[in-house]
Image 1 (cartoon, rainbow, N blue to C red):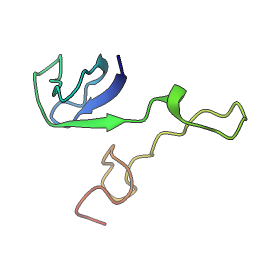
Image 2: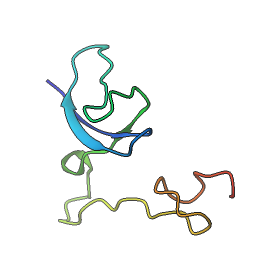
Image 3: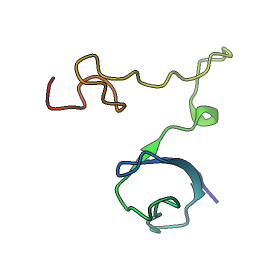
Length: 74
């Protein structure tokens, strides 16, 4: 069973969930359906080095946690 990581775009809650087939997960915190699928750090190839995947930083203009270019100010 594939394990996916998600971030709820409504409440910001991050969670992992097993997903089978075309099933659509819901946020366990607010039951929202607007989810962003995240890259799992164990699934990210690093070319043989032990470096961890880097998470995006917040937007420098507004502080949007989705990272630079995610808001309407950019």
